Image (tube, rainbow over all chains, first blue to last red; front, side, top):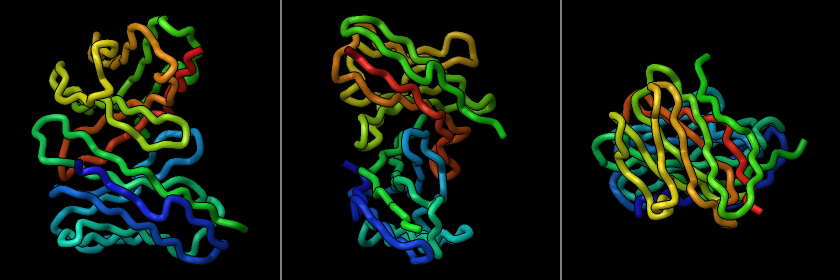
Length: 113
Length: 115
């Protein structure tokens, strides 16, 4: 299975602190993506990192990718209460056509004011 | 900003009944997906669709499930005879291109409750 697995499953921190979530996967990938899901809502794409990239930034988000270890991390700096959500990593495969994304279990992040 | 829309937002049905969940993907997208999420659990792939046919389906997507794109805009998921374990959030997603350019755009989901 190429499924991503996030850890920790749940993370609770104080507002202003940094939050780091990790993702591991099993097979080779073209890219790895991170999504956010507010409770009861749809998933929203945050950032995509290609297999030949090692680090990518977008605002307060920093994603790293280590293909040798088949792992990625998502760092949210200077967290805010509004960052409270579940965060999922997702990996694609090399399937031609409508490539699916395979999602991990997610990390439930709670930012305490 | 274009978005994926799903209807109904919530449907309650009796076990054994047929259910149709509807989705309108983003208009210039070519690849379409259904995922489901049982409450508090992971997001599971059901089926992908391209060029008017199924590209790939998961083990969950058995003979009770079918998809259609009947008119070039709607993308429907039908569950022929619902079971209790079909209770979940069902998400439709679309994207313009697969692979390296491919972020998925998700709808807000249809919550299905089977009694």
